[in-house]
Length: 265
Ligand SMILES: Cc1cc2nc3c(=O)[nH]c(=O)nc-3n(C[C@H](O)[C@H](O)[C@H](O)COP(=O)(O)OP(=O)(O)OC[C@H]3O[C@@H](n4cnc5c(N)ncnc54)[C@H](O)[C@@H]3O)c2cc1C
Image (cartoon, rainbow, N blue to C red):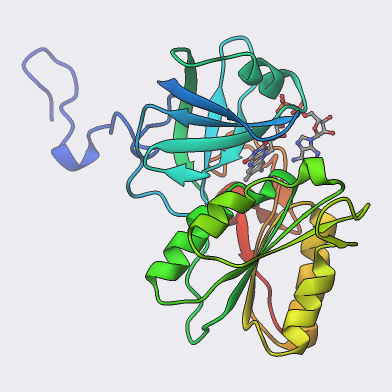
């Protein structure tokens, strides 16, 4: 079929979609920074002038600045879009140099989110380092679904502990651990999680943080026979399952993660 000008005329259902990658599309869209809240010397929370009402906790956006590589960041909140970013490399250090009125370029949201685990009442939410970022957003969803979450926030030192107030504001009890004992209980965050499970005070685990912590949570879930949903990290290129950069344990984390369910044997 041809149009009068001789160009092929696509039937409506074949017409190219201009924005196939979600509400913000495959091409990054600039969003103005509304507010910057410093969490600690390395980490800051950026509140942006934009909303992603359909986004779910555990999903991420790709963030870009001209002249830099893109990188994924979990949504700390969706309305307004809020990101908690640790300055670790070129992109994140450049973002930390920005202030209100300046722009970040975003595309997404992407990835499999956390879900409400059926037939559970007492979810244990575990965050290490900036992994705490999406936990309050997740807690809000679980509370709305009638669950009674408790949270566990771990870090190396007191300086590394972020996000506790946001969880407590929701009425979620928070257990804090630091490896040097400078705040809360001394040791690893998985220790109090293990105690809660042993006492039957938790029936599902949710985790975001370093891979060592996630592997430990997977072992705890299997040992206690409770389901677990864990958010894994990898370098990401395209975020839509094409480039293969984010392969982890045989899964492409951008589309088959970042949240993966632990298989209980
Ligand atoms: C799904 C997902 C969600 C994320 N959410 C957040 C978030 O909410 N807040 C946040 O601050 N960061 C988050 N990250 C991590 C962030 O995308 C990376 O730290 C990013 O690479 C930083 O870019 P950069 O150019 O500043 O530093 P880069 O030069 O890319 O990295 C600097 C250094 O950090 C380390 N590093 C970075 N990424 C990884 C990785 N995936 N695995 C192991 N080491 C790594 C490396 O040692 C590297 O040398 C997330 C990553 C994923 C996959």
